[in-house]
Length: 94
Image 1 (tube, rainbow, N blue to C red):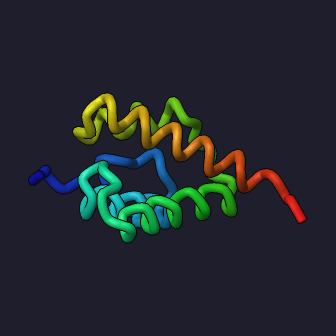
Image 2: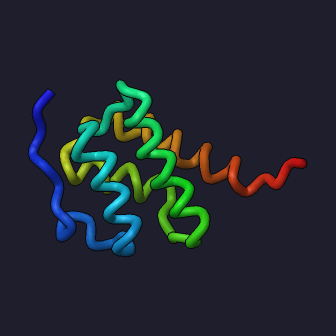
């Protein structure tokens, strides 16, 4: 499905590299995870946010996704995946 590309100025609350990674995912996938590369791009965004301690909560990501045009169901699912990924990265299992 076609969507309007998101620009850097639409997501000013993210640091520059996090913004670039988010745009890499969202502008290609349109908020969906249909192809394995879509998931790879979203995971890169999650890993970067964790590694650089980006202060972005699950609710803030959902609001950001809604603001840039993602439908509410996808925004909720993506924010859940984001939260789950961040929580998994906190666990330092052997």
